[in-house]
Image (cartoon, rainbow, N blue to C red; front, side, top):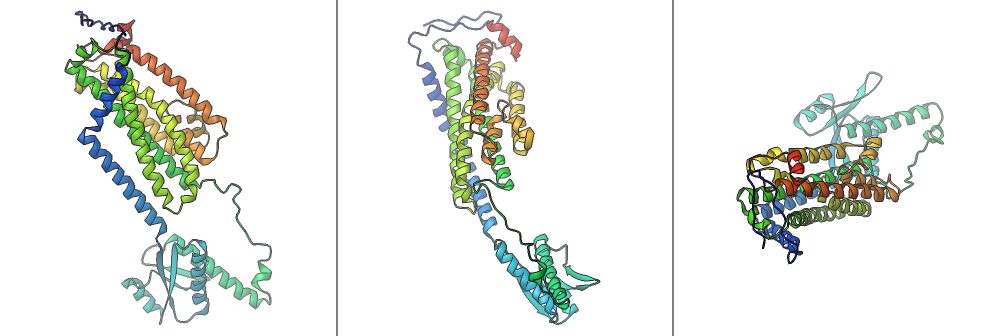
Amino acid sequence: MTTLTQSPSNAPVQDPPDDGTRGAWLLVAQREIVTRVMNKAFVIGLLVSLVVIGLLAAFFTWQSSRVDTYTVAVAGTDATAVGSVTGAAELAEAENGSTELELLEVADDDAARAALSTGDADVWLHPGDGGWVLAGEGQPDGTVSRLVGTAVEQQVLAANAEAAGTSMDALSEGAALTTEALDPQAMGEDTVFFATFALSFLFFAGAIGSGMMIASSVVEEKQSRLVEIIATAVPLRQLLAGKILGSSVIAVGQNLLFAAVGLVAVAASPISIALPALSTSLIWFVVFFTVGFLALAALYAVAGALASRSEDLQYTSTPMTMLVMGVYFLTFSASGTFQTVLSYIPVANVVAMPARVLSGETTWWEPVVSLLILGAFAVLALLVSERAFRGALMQTGGRVSWKQALRAEA
């Protein structure tokens, strides 16, 4: 076994021979995984996150399936008003059933105002100057206004057509509009937005949580000088590889758990038809995240090596944290050409490309090309990080810059 010798200039330690230590990286990875899994704070945080995701999914499922009921007051027995409310209720039922309208007939206008004040009615439909008025204590609900407005227009047009000696059918002949989905599996804009937001959040939580885990692990071993003992038995190259692998397993496993809970929630929701497309997008996300996190984990490991104390970690990890936050905020709000560009930029494409796959905007080769670009970036990041890690890990005289770390190993 080679004995550690460190010069006053904090020169990097030389790796021990690889003979007998070729599998050391696997032992390091196992230690990282076991340490994290046995950490109570991590386990509690993971369970809380799963419960929160489940509760949010249940809330959105309930929200999308609940029915809003509105009561429309009509003063007297005005046939047009009564017919309009009845027609609006039929329109609401034909649309999606999430809104119901009920008719409340009252004696006069004063009784209608009283019904609004007491909450017995949500809105009041009555004639106005040159038309009709839908009144409420506050601004009437937009959906109710649209439904009642359409029904009033139909009622008035029918009455005018009858007075002119014709019929509504004759007046509206050829004006029927139907909808058609050329791609039944295509996602709606709202579904794509919320799914992209979920992917961005998964990336953010996995990258920040597991990235800081590896950085903290490195700096704690360095601060306690345990790394000096480890370095005499384990080549630094394998030490870094083990830490990257261990943290990557935790990060990917955590995201798989979150994604599984999300897919179960989608399967039980009204948008279950989107499950195949969401599953495909999630598969691509897991693949992209796995490759992208290898680069991020290496960079976070260097952030830990650059620090000499835990207090220095916030400073040395800032560039990676800003990168992760930038990807998070840019990707879930991106669209059009900007999203297309992001889908080919390393790290940002971890979220942007799966989001484009979900929206159906990509051909088969685009995710493959984007993944190759991300893979090339990961290889470059691993090579540079390995050099900086070896150059900075054994230096304990304060914070080390990237420049100093790279020069130390030169």
